[in-house]
Amino acid sequence: MSRDEKFNAPELGQEAPVLGKEEFSPVVGLRCPLRCPNEVLALRWEDVNWELDRFFARSSKTEHHDGKEGRWVPIFPELRAELEPLFFDRASVGKEFVITRYRDASQNLRTTFGKIVHRAGLEMFPRPFDNMRMTRSNEVYRKWGAFLESQWIEHSRQIRDDHYLSITDEDFSAAAGWSVQMTEKPKSKEVYENRGFSPKLGQNGSK
Image 1 (tube, helix red, strand yellow):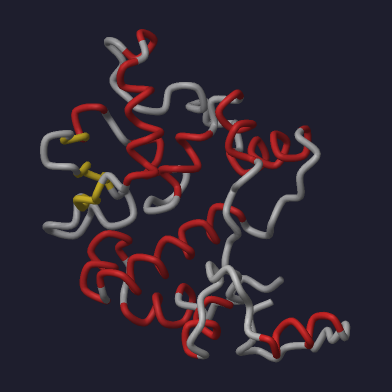
Image 2: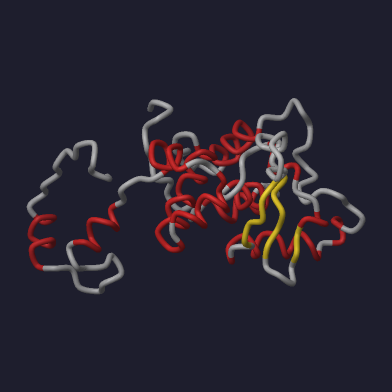
């Protein structure tokens, strides 16, 4: 897979309990809106504003520009589920940084993540951290629009359009007027699947 090829990351699903046991789940949760490892490891507890439901992401990539030292990012519900247990954990009392276990400069977070997934007997998807951030970018763009997506994920419109936005299976289903959550599939879909069709999709396909 090339660096510029769009790939919509799947839900972690089965990996979630495994990541929790390895104390890696918060890293994955933070990686969705943040760059890894710099922004993830730079997050301090003083940056988390529980009252206003947001945290300040320090950005080493843009800090040399005036007013670009960082950005405020929402504490998304799934991210709150990862941060709150850490915050109330006795081991976090007196700690400066949110992520404390993976601070060794010689430690590669992607390699560590791959080992955890491999030990669980699960399949690693390509460029996991980049694609989780890409997936979050798509979600924010679709739900809150281009302006908030650029503010919370922090990249230019050109970068977003060229490298982040992608077409998903849900887009095709929604345009066709049905939802993947529907209990009853359209009859044509059932017949199509029963006949064993397996078409190859082009660049704008999703599967």
